[in-house]
Image 1 (spheres, one colour):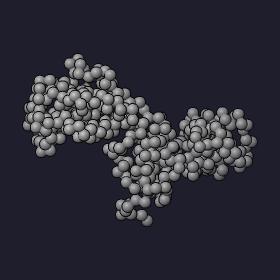
Image 2 (image 1 turned 90 degrees about the vertical axis):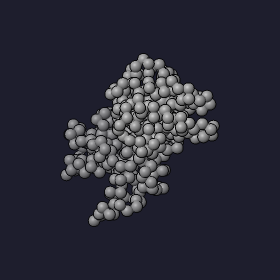
Image 3 (image 1 turned 135 degrees about the vertical axis):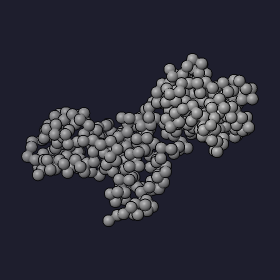
Image 4 (image 1 turned 135 degrees about the horizontal axis):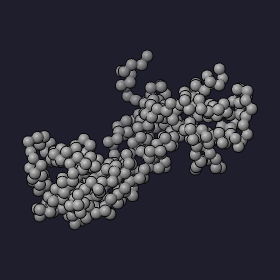
Length: 391
């Protein structure tokens, strides 16, 4: 019997699990090359003309906003060193630091880790920030993540004050740049004075990730995080398909890590598509029994056939499914449906969410429809349906 001590031993599955952390920022961010280039063009004057800049980054959860901004700031810092311009950045999550004083405290502890957490007013903290900027002779990029939380609670005075710091003191001209990150459009949360410092052309809107980019992200994390040849072919494609509805890279990375953990729990030496189904069932449970009761006998037989075919693989073809379905019909003493009716029922099960279909792509001979099951471990479906149909 395995114990907690066994679980603490070095993993045979994971090479470096830290690379699956949401805080980890890879050197290359698949699918966000264009957005990093946009930021580079916006902030070029910071390097060469000692100017300040502002930017707004919007987009849904898991679309790479924070990772892109953090990676870009690392690139900007390096470019600053090459051009003898000291550039630093501080990242503040406004969901955790909801008030103006807490935001300023985060910035001041960047310069002085021992700065006291109480006892100073907002104006006093701003004056101390000015002194640090002059002493350090640096350009500071302030990143306000989840900025809408701060703006809704405290208004936009702090954003305005950051821009006024450099306007009121020639020694601080070009000392601060601002990047606001939000899931929501936040232009309407800024007052006119603050809004005047943000150019509307400096808004970069991140769309959801598509399937191909999600697969590239998962493949990258597999390379970084797992021992070689541990993750079976088809796993990254399946996880990309599972995450495509949300376009959420965080969800995809979470599913990948959970897949590896499930494989370990089950004592497997590899991570296969079934482990990813178990992972999704834990992260987003799907109660399938009630849905199965709405299916007729032929649809249930088709689902059992698909489950058996997918026990060790990510996808099967419609031809393979139809052949397996016809063989199963003999076992339950039912006459198989014709091809047209079979196809219609398959589309209905896709609508129910019990199976998912897609057209075959590169690497597949011909052009056929591929079938998978994403939301339920096929082992559970096989067990349930065999008791229903064959007992």
